[in-house]
Structure formats: structure tokens, C-alpha cells
Length: 231
Image (tube, rainbow, N blue to C red; front, side):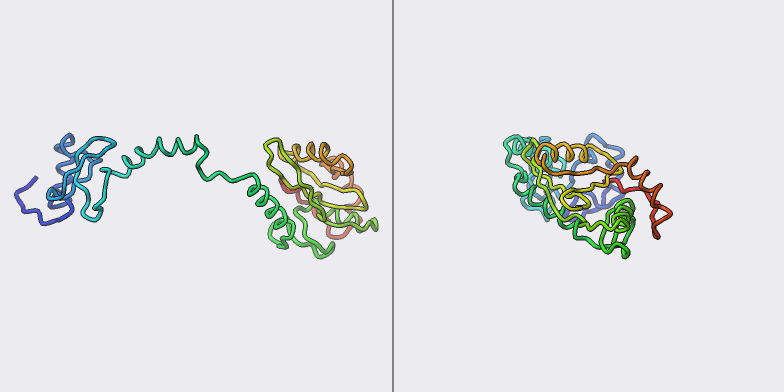
């Protein structure tokens, strides 16, 4: 591009200006995707794009002209590993163990940020204002209860085990405060009915909660009016 002597060891251009000029005036001879290293280095041919290139002096074992070509060359190998099941696939046992640990960790969490948190008047952690109010109603009625005392493993069709913890236990039956029904919640309810038919669970939805709120909202101090959390 110029008559100046190039003293740089890692490129065939003496300056950035000459390099940009070459890219602009001779795009076919100097495509931007190529790496232009010192011509004194050993010339190589990229096995992916078949373009000649000079490896960078700090990459003595450089095989491909660019990281893009290196990635493309391993694309089929990575795909085949996935087809052969040789990737990092978590076993059902490991997934079940993580599910149980996450469930127990959430159940034993005591924090006061947001709707979920510890309530002084009922003496335990809850996940929503609806759960807090139901705990207050049970105390108002003199009902002794436990909050999330039991865990029920549920086996899905893919052999993965999920863990379900009902909210309140009063005697031998349970209360589940469910303001929102999503696919996971519906599946859990179905699996509980199939795998634990002897367990009695009262699912307290929005209609039931509104009836309770109409009766006890003015009677109980500290009644919370926020929506139930989506979970």
C-alpha cells in the first residue's frame, strides 16, 4: 500500500491506515475476514474455508484462519455428541436430588422481602399474603396447624420425581392456597389424586378465598389485601 518499510511482526501492513486502504481499494485481495500476519511465518491453508493464511506469532499451533472457521469445523462433532447422548445430560437421580433440595431450601427460607416472608403475628414464614391471612383465620378459629410439614414425592411420566408440599396441615387433612392455576399446579393436583388417593387436600381457590375474606377481613387485625403470588 506504501513504500515504507514494515517493521511490525504480526501483520503485513505497516499501519492501520494502510490496512484500511487495502480493505477499501482491494476487497477481493484483502477480505476483512482474513488474518494478515507476517509473511515470514509459515503459510497455512484453513481446513474449513480453504483460504491461505499466516498464523499469528503468538498462536504457533493455529489451525484455522479464524474462530468462526474453528467453530464451524466442530459443529458436526458437537451435533453427533448430542445424538449419541454423550453430552452433559443430567441423570434422573441427580435431577430428583436437586428438585428435593430446592424444595426444602425454599420451605426453610425466612426472609421479609416482598409478599413472601416471616409474619410475626402467626409466627412462621409464608409465600403470599393469602397464605398469611389463612394462617390468621385458622388461629382465630383456634385450629392448631402446621405450615408445610410434609413432602410428597410425585413421579411424572418421564420418571422425573417432583416434590409437592401442601401449605397447611390441620389434623389429618391439608389446605392448599392456590390463587393461580398453571400447568404445573394442575399436573401436581392430578398426580396427588392418582398416587396419594388417601390424602385429603382442600384446594382453596380465588372464590373460596374471597368468601373467607368477606367474613374475616374486618375481624382480624393485620389482614393483608395483596394478591396471591404466582407459583
